[in-house]
Structure formats: structure tokens, C-alpha cells
Length: 259
Length: 257
Image 1 (cartoon, helix red, strand yellow):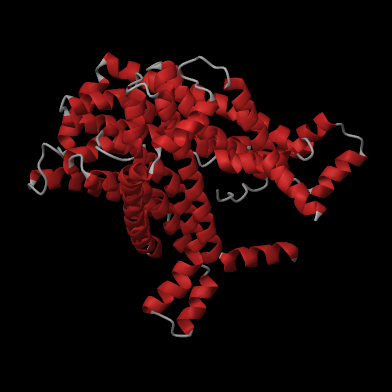
Image 2 (cartoon, helix red, strand yellow):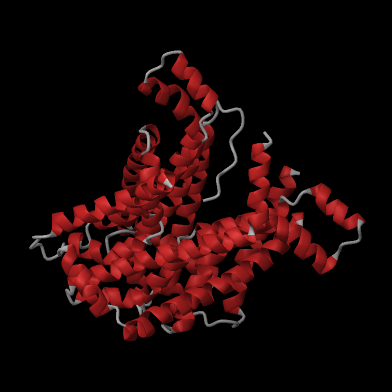
């Protein structure tokens, strides 16, 4: 019981200290750009009402999930093909390395040429940025499939989709998840940036509106919302990962104990 | 084996360029949107002859290097302090886990208000984004210190500073170098993003200008330049990593973050 309390103390102590420090330091702030935390927090419920959540946050999240899902599907599919054949890999690798090295946000103006400024553009931007870490990690994961395991599968006559699902993708999945985690933070960045460029709704759009209109406390609440969103998505990702990769983490923990 | 891979890779790249030339020429997409690679190459040549381009490149590299330097210094210092002082790691864990996933672009409006299109705007975003990469890797590295080595050093009477220098630092260095490599790539992304969105001088701002003035081949040429820059930064970081770890018996596996 005392241990639990102590751990709880460790978790909440520093955040409490920081928030208190922010509260006290900004309490009588007259600086326009650094409004008191009290003002920001009282503005928060006024700004982020149900209506705004529906009209701005929801579209952003839908675009993010559409782009992310498309990137995952394309990245895993292409990555499996490229990773399975040595020659295909040798041909594609330099091009992929180059495309990956392009900073994703510069694709926003390029994709705007093709797709205008609608939702398609934003989904395409998110997908085109997210696809590279997933694709390259899948290639690495598929390439590293244990030869003994794949030979065993072959000699038991496990081929085709069964082999793909149970041997190749399964053993590549820790790598694929590492790529998806990188892609998630790129996706959030691109979601915000594509909305800052050209949009009529969405989180990025709203926050820039506040900033241009000098609604500073409102802008701060927007920054807080983006922060909470990033945090929430990473928690969700970790829960999903723990479920899907439970077997893998268990295996690693037991092999570490046996050392 | 190595030679054939290089040949296949070169063939792949040539194929990529040929496809880029052919698709707009054959009319699959309008060449107003997607100019053939020869026109982009011509635009690139024109860019390279332009002084303003080199100034922009210099601005981007300044923001990148300065931001990365600040982030690396701060990240390593914070990481080592957190690791060395008892209980500090447990006390900071929740805060780090909360602050890390905050997307750095959330700070764009604040950067605009505080610094306008000055270099500080770029630095704010670059430092925030790359600091976490370094900090997390440093923490992982310090966690990897062999307790036996640590106890041995203690029993030989090494002081805290000597233990950091001779036990902790060599163990953590491979992880730190991985962090630096990741941070170098992230720093470029954020430097170009800040220029593109905020309008701070640099390659990103030049891309934004090319886009608004409908100079499509120039825009593609600049995008290619940022890609080459990213490639060079990756290569450079890998070389530095290999040099710095030359003493290490084997470069360690990367921690998935």
C-alpha cells in the first residue's frame, strides 16, 4: 500500500509542481502573449464546446485515420513484396531512401497542385508522409524473417496466404509497429500543417485563426488540445501495440530473465 | 554481390527518372502539375546559378545545425542528470511521457507571435522536436549500464564524475548516437516546415514562394534539393556514428522508439 502511494506520488509530483509554477508565474501576467494560466483554463470550456469538437476536431481525426490507414495498407503490402525478393529490394532501395529523405511537409504544396485544397489533398498528404517509415520498416522486418522458421514452414507445406500471415507478417510485426509509431507522429504533424495551409475547418485551421485574430488565450487552449490529442493517440497506440505484440514482449522478457 | 546490388540500384534509379520523364510526356498527368524530370533539372540548374538559392540553403542549414546543437547538448545533459540523481528518473517519467508526444507544430502559432519570421521561430520548433529523441535515447542508454560494472567502479572508489565519464558515458554513447541520427532527420523536417509555414527565410520559404507564383518546375527542383539534403544528413550522421563508435566491438541494436 505504501509502495503504491509512493509510486503515485512519483507520477503526479512533478506535473503538479510544473503546473503550479506555470500558474504562479503567469498569475499576474499582463504580457499579451503569455496570458495567466487561470485565463487559459477558464477559456478552455468556452472554446472547445461540443459544436467545435464536431466541426473541427472530428474532421481532423477522420482525415488522420484515413491517411494513416491508407499508409499502413500500402506500406505493409509494398514492403512485404520488396522485402521478400532480394533483387526487387536492390532495385528499389536507392529510390526509396531518396523519397524517404524528402521532408514530408514540402509535399503539401506539391499535392495541392494535384488534389486542390479539399479533404483528398489532406488525406493524400498524411498518407504520403506516413508511408515511408512503415514501408521501410516492413522491408527490414520481412527481410529478417528467421530462415529456420521459414524453412520449417515450407517443409510442413505452409505456403501462400497462411505462410504470409502466420510466418512472414507475424515475425515482421515488431518492426512494422516501430514504423507505425514513427508514422503516427508524422501523421499528426502533417494533419496540422495541411490544415494550416488551406482549409475551412480542422484543428490546425482553427488554431491559426485564433492566432491571426489575436485571440491569444483561445490559441493557447488550441495548443493544449493538440498536446492532449498527441498524448491520447500515443496512449491508444501503446495499448493496441501491447495487445497485438503481447507474445513478443513476453518472449523478450523471458529471454532476458534466462540470461 | 555488392557490385550487382549497386548496379541494380542504379538501374532502379534510372528507371525512376525515366518514369518521371515518360508519365507527363505521354499525357498521363498534365505537365503543368507534374513536369517531366528534364524540365525540373533545367529549373534546378537555374536555381544553382542563383545567389538567393544559396542564401536560402545557408539559412536552412543554420537553423538545422544550431537547433540540433542546442537539442543535443540539452538532451544529453538532462538525460545524464536524470539518470544519475536518485529518484529523478521515476519523478520525471510521467512528465516526459506526457510532453514527448505533443506535436511540435502545435507551437507554430506561438512561435509566430513571439518571434515572427526570425531564426528563433525555427529554433523553437527544431529544438522542441529533436530534444526528445536525444533525451529518450540517453535514458535508454543509461539504463543499459551493467550493474556489476557500476558496483565495481564504486568499490574502486571512483567518484560520481569519474563514474559518469568511464562507466556511464561509454555505455550510453551508442544509444546517444542513434538519438543524434534520428534527431538530425527530425531537425531538418522541422526547419523546412517552419520556413514553409511561418515564412522564415530558407528553402521552405522559397518553396512556398514558388508555389504561390505557380513556378511548378522550380518548386519540384527545390523539393528535390530538400530530399538530397535529407539524404546527405542521413549519410553524414551514419558516418559520424561509425567513427564515434569505432572502439565499440559491435554497433548495438537500435532501441525501437
